[in-house]
Amino acid sequence: MQQRKLGGLTVSAIGLGCMGFSQGYGSVDDDESIAAIRTAIGSGITLFDTAQSYGGGHNERLLARALRDADESVRVATKFGIVRTDAGVGLDAKPERVREFCDASLARLERDVIDLYYLHRVDPEVPIAETVGAMAELVRAGKVRQIGISEATPEQIAQAAAVHPIAAVQFEWSMLWREPEGDIVPAARELGIALVPYSPLGRGLLTATLDSDTVASSDFRRNDPRFTGDNLASNLAQVTALREFAGRLGISAGQLALAWLLAQGPDVVPIPGSRRAGRIVENAAAAAVELSADDLAELEKIVRAEAWAGDRQSFAAHGTARSGS
Ligand SMILES: NC(=O)c1ccc[n+]([C@@H]2O[C@H](COP(=O)([O-])OP(=O)(O)OC[C@H]3O[C@@H](n4cnc5c(N)ncnc54)[C@H](OP(=O)(O)O)[C@@H]3O)[C@@H](O)[C@H]2O)c1
Image (cartoon, rainbow, N blue to C red; front, side, top):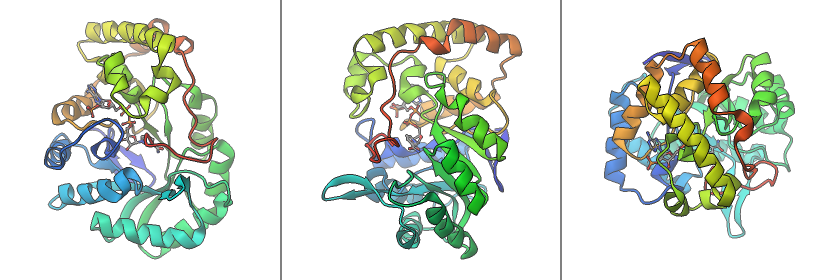
């Protein structure tokens, strides 16, 4: 698999998003999940993306079990800041909590150091510079190698980078969701920060395997405006065009969606999520797909950015988080 850089880390061009092993997309069996994660390693994947909040710690513990015999090339990225309280799901990125969150993640992950530690959501009650200041102390203490931020605005990214080098920003970006190309992508690039698109398969839509029944079985997609009513019907028509174009190239629709992201620049490292070994292998193989300039131009005409219907439900703007984050 081709390699890319996240700050000082070298990782596979395509990582594995692990959230679905604990929440969001339906039932899971831990033994099958562990086998799927090991299949990912066998496919050349070295970047594994988790979070303290995924399954309330289940995801980090599962990853620890799966990676026990993995070699040094395997990199773990985790996130803090989304917390569950009696009042529901909220945010906490107070500096005094950051070390505690990190120690708890290290214990669940059974590791001495986190390769890439993200602030999952900016806490509206805490200036981002203060949170990042506490994260920088973790780097100095040898508990964290690189710092990242998820779902931040360009202004917040700049404020964070003024405190400590930021290796990566994580945000939703895919053929289905192009908005970051107008602000986050150029802002991060100006600061030399790598881009980690989450939900790169458009929460599964871009794989051309979804229909209204599968959407209804997912606990958060059915609340996402892009997956409901007329919007879904219209978006599925776009996906048909995507699938037909992919077929002409001899690849799957999902592989085309991932190859499109990789073609946006050498600083892009998508983290598709799947609970199934066969699909992980399929997704990893997208790293070998080379799209020509003509392919990319034709794709823009066939699957038009402005033709997608429905807004995404904003996580950051509400200051809260949902199970799909
Ligand atoms: N920073 C954040 O706030 C944030 C938010 C969301 C996600 N994330 C991270 O990003 C990762 C990926 O995002 P995501 O899981 O939301 O969306 P995604 O990767 O765009 O899509 C995942 C969905 O696609 C399906 N899928 C994957 N590969 C497939 C294939 N080859 N063929 C058919 N279906 C396929 C999966 O189903 P199966 O599991 O059944 O294969 C799942 O339903 C997460 O795991 C998480 O690590 C971060």
